[in-house]
Length: 121
Image 1 (cartoon, rainbow, N blue to C red):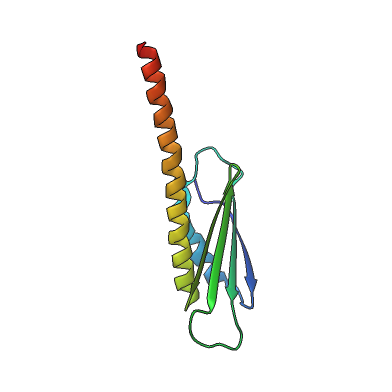
Image 2: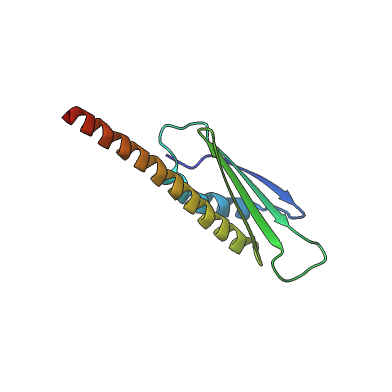
């Protein structure tokens, strides 16, 4: 399964083809954490330069909204460069996906244990 198409939006910032390729490459590793068989996955990325008059500091913001199966996962990062912001937001989104994945897996296992205990009686 490949990662869904990424919809990008920008504010006060020009999105280049190289930056879009970087987004695709970095987020493609998260495809394995998405639920199987879910075709209605929507990924929206917003990249922004927060201020025009500041030249240094944490002025770049990246935000990702990932929706699938009625769930919405959101991650946001503000960093000194756009690459750092993208890396940070990817790691936050990965953490959220792993948490969702493990929660679902534990519910399935708990249900299987109950079914097995019921069959023993």
